[in-house]
Image 1 (spheres, rainbow, N blue to C red):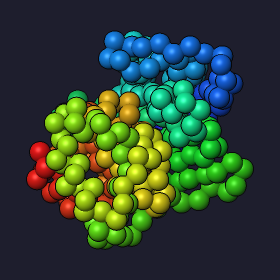
Image 2 (cartoon, rainbow, N blue to C red):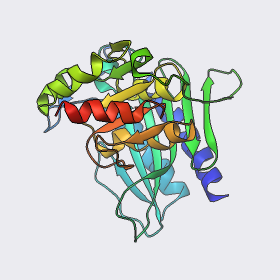
Image 3 (cartoon, rainbow, N blue to C red):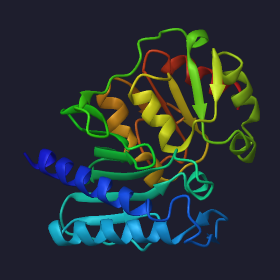
Amino acid sequence: MELEARLSFANQIAKAAGKRTLKYFQTTLFDVQKKEDGSPLTIADQDAERYLRKMIQEHYPSDSIIGEEFESVEGSSPYRWILDPIDGTKSFISGVPLYGTMVAVEQIESDSKTRNSVIGSVYLPGLDVGVYAAQGLGAWAFQGDQPVVRAKVSKKSRLEDSVLTTSSIDSFGAREAGDAYQALSSSVYFCRTWGDVYGYFLVATGRVEVMIDPELNIWDAAAVQPIIEEAGGRFTDWQGNQRIDSGDAVGSNGLIHEAVLQKLGAGI
């Protein structure tokens, strides 16, 4: 199957690219630059993305590529790879292992008004754990050399029993959504900033119930959408639309999703 082949390849390159970052992690072998939007950039980000692009162009030369660090490549096939070589660069810079390499595949449909991924692969090299999924093939998690297991979201159905994660509380204020955060965080069991890709990993593997981002790019969302959905959860924007390009996101176990959206809507 086409998706199975691409998923296997996505897993292979995500893990290899993630491992490349470890030669820089918790070392002084890199400088930190600032991009135009103020976000940090290191040689590790660039090295990992160059590797991903090289492998994709060798094996799927007709596919399109979008990545965080370099220009987009237009292809002729209906498949588009979406890459985030280091999601959680600030954690990486700080020597905190809660960062990951994210590889997604979008199937381009000319008559579709929304953008959705069909494949997602995430690898957290500092923890040596990962999770991956393809549409209709389920979600699967692994840790080191242990056997791969089915990834499933939690079964908690009440917001007050749920754990909320987010990347940065400050980012809610940046989009004037501080009241939305307060409304949501005061309704859950507790909240932690186990954010970036790690937060979505925790949702997909049943550790927490909801991860929310008030601001994110398509490469931050693309890989986690199929993972959370195939694990039994929901991934939407703040308006409840199933898409990866809205600029905000909610990933949940599905059972509390509507309650989360209601809190967000009341706080905006």
